[in-house]
Image 1: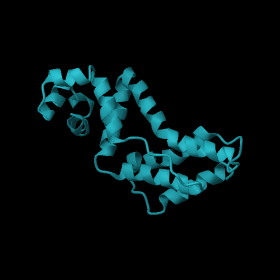
Image 2: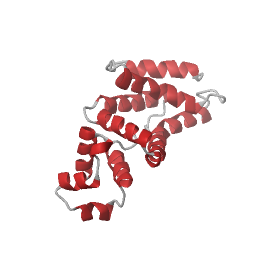
Image 3: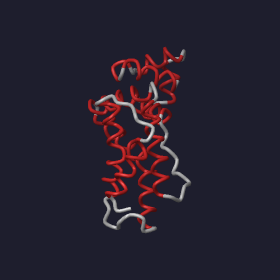
Image 4: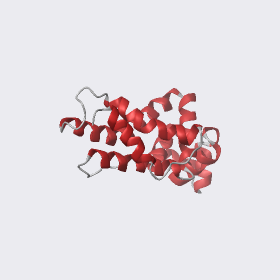
Length: 174
């Protein structure tokens, strides 16, 4: 049913994302869908979680390498065919429904956590300044990717992750 939900969201956005449509696409009854997800919001959250689980925290001890691994993983996800459409539909849905907005914030925070952990660990090791704003550094690492993908529709170069990480590391005093 999750696959059916993701297909509908990608194809029709929030207006086409109904419990009835998901049941029909999955070849299941509405009762079956409602027994697992009592609300459309819960189904949407599970669908988005399955489409893009948070990246694992890299095992690399080097700050630069760990950040490049994370940024490259995010860029790969944004370069897929379906995921960007799902993300755009979900962001649009969150703008329309306050309950989804809270869920979207929670999903986003979970996806930011690996980068936050890498930067926090680096701060403890003295690799970045104590006064470096970690949340802003995360914004600086992720914002350009979303800008390139959703606003200017430019691909990521082979070295984009490295360049982005190097600029941010200079800003945080690495």
